[in-house]
Length: 620
Image: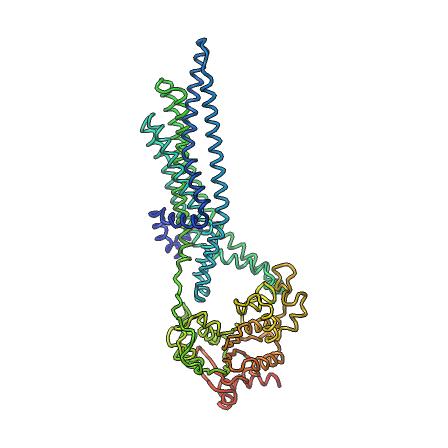
């Protein structure tokens, strides 16, 4: 079975079929939305494109009509000369000048259309990419952890940014060719109504084949999204500085490059099979149109020889039939292209119409500021997972208290933080802050109260100060706040030693960028958390994993001094740090199995005491 035939049996191809069917039956389904999008991008350019399209549609028939009169005028003048009479050449020259003017206007119209399309392409590409990114800002975290969503996003970004203008261009092109065909019809019907019917029927076979293979191409496009995304990922791994060390050290380069080539060859086989079928059928069915054209030529020539039409009319009908056939072909091609654009645009609007959770809370203040945070029978399961990540969690943290979370990787510690910060919503149970359910809180207000450092914190390829300022976008460019937060995060000393201090470019993506050590990056992240001076909940998820034990202890003593009257939640595998917390919970399999302070948990001789003893033994 060929690679292309194989993909037809895949579920992705099967799921695409209903969309393709709807796209063929509603080839104009997205035309209105695409035109509205282009119109909102630039009123002036869209209007100019429409006007020039109208002009370009009317001019060809006028050129053919003037050309016929030129030929007839020349024939008449030649007959007068042979008869010894003086010809009226002024009329010939005026007709030639008129045709020249029309041809010039046609060239100007086509150039204007190209100009408008070029500018619209640039503006519309930016506009659609902004729409894609704006939509991304409204999506929940669960979308970004879903592979099917990434396939949807990949399809939208790869093709859909250019398709709205393509659909509009084809819509205007369809209008232009319909106008031209109507004007040709007015000329051809005077020769024979059958000529118009032949002209229309001759283009249908090629159109049907083109529409069929447009659907096949779209099916292939949807099927290949995961492989395309894998190729992009492999390119990133092979060409990015953050993975270059391991790629070279472990000799991964040839292996990953071979995998990259294998994906290409797999996709290329499917492309080649489709292209071969498409072009073979296109060539065979295109010959029908060519045969029809020359049969029409023979008919027109025979009619001229029989004296039923003049030589000028013959020339005009030749031109009109040839251009009419081109117009019919362009019309059918536009409809087929619009069908194809409709299919690809469905991926854009499928992405843009991804349902999102609308913020429903409005509370900006709790009912009991002394209550702190409560988890009441909270359960949460990741989409697609069989087991809950958190199961029946009950927890109370009062203002001014610190809580440490202990457990193996994957036990649910970070998930608990994501629920607290409303990156996820619990499946059951509720989380309260100051006596009010998080669902009822205004999300912006809630997140301003939380300063958080995740274990996989972002390392922005920006200036040092901007990396810190990211913790509070309302003071993103405030250098005084950068320095204040840098000092609290114990990052000020090494930052001042950098070439441009807080204005030093970080990362290697841009000129003069400096790379930091893991510990220095973690101090930057810690400073970022202190940018939110109004935050009364501080969350540290393995914030010092890249530091040695002594540096971590120093940072946490400093951190505790700065965190009085705040709720502090800490995730760490180092018990020298964990034991400082007012209360400790041990999570295993998504459930709290032990709860107390360090002394209580050691006395219980349970899981915590076992882990503490193991770690303490390592320091003996």
